[in-house]
Image 1 (cartoon, rainbow over the protein chains, first blue to last red):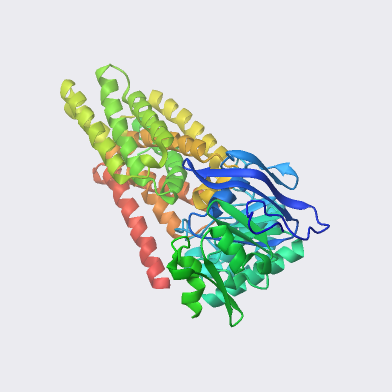
Image 2: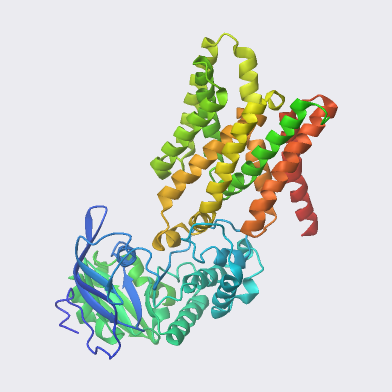
Length: 286
Length: 263
């Protein structure tokens, strides 16, 4: 990785033999006319498990939308598997944040199946191969027992497993997961990260997972992508989550405290550069 | 009962309309757009009275008015379709315009009753042809868009990322709802469109069937309620719309009670 003083030019320190899964060159992204990320360049190798961290509004969702081809970049170019990003890329699986449940009376199986080639015109008739694909996706997330239960009767963690199964239907090579840990209790958080990690390893998927708290991801993620003040910093936890690197990124004094095997990012004197929830770890685990 | 031409026509008309209203209503309820469809029928009312004034058939005005409103609603997106207040406003303005047109019509009283509460026994064989055409078009349209519409309804963000054209689907679906509403109003009247469009759909959705089975069951239940209403009205001399409304409510309650006891 390049010097932490130039966080916009974040590159991996040890590029593996693996081909690049996601690459951005001088990308500037805006949302509602406001520049959210400016001139970001980065390269993520195939099979890498990346935690995307940063405050609310730091650009996590905007970055995901751009990689999905939903919002064009103001400037720069983005590639996934060597091809320019485009909407509806089969190789990209996207799991949005959980929101209000629609169709809670459907069984888990029906819910997952609704995403099977859901972009094709016609009737929701799945055929033998389609049904087998739905069964396989459910099995991949250990959700066979949820298949016949109405979704409204499931817990948040169980519903999330169904969402994950839906993203696996197209056999993606890149997974973009938007805050999958939000609204889960701490035990479920770790379980979820472990499940996704195991799946990603088995299928050699590249995973970008946004999160508010770094701790559930520690030890499992290969890289951190830290977004702040329009910049991005990509590297290993040891490279990025340091007082020096984050202070440079935020442009304000930030302390990284390690205690009890956990990491806490705290702003000195409650500096305004840092959003409150960046410190979520301190509150939750203090 | 079936010895009479007008009754045979009524049964056929009820069948054509119910088979469309059931499945369209199923999606309508799932998407939470029932109030929007209610507004469409009221805009259709203004269109129908306007058509009567111009000497056209009310079905033309109903379908035209509802269709225009449906497409505009889809284009406006969540700014209108997702807002009760906006829909309520559109609805009341449309009703007001309809009242004005009725006032200007000389034979307003009977026309108003037929439009508002339906006149299934007054359906002409010529009208039957139109209903058949509209129903065939609606079912074909629904058959084409059912799969992406289901995905877009249940997981809009995921569907958008997979390349499903959300707004196009919304416009197409509301156009379909408009035509189904216009058809339905021939039988149940503008005010009771809910009875065939929404009641069977909510009842079926409670059952938790798979989507394809649910769409079929909604069509079947709508048909049973429409025909049941006709038969009951034949024997009791009460309006068909009344019986269809009552059957719709009763079906919903029965399923609810059955589930309560089973649970």
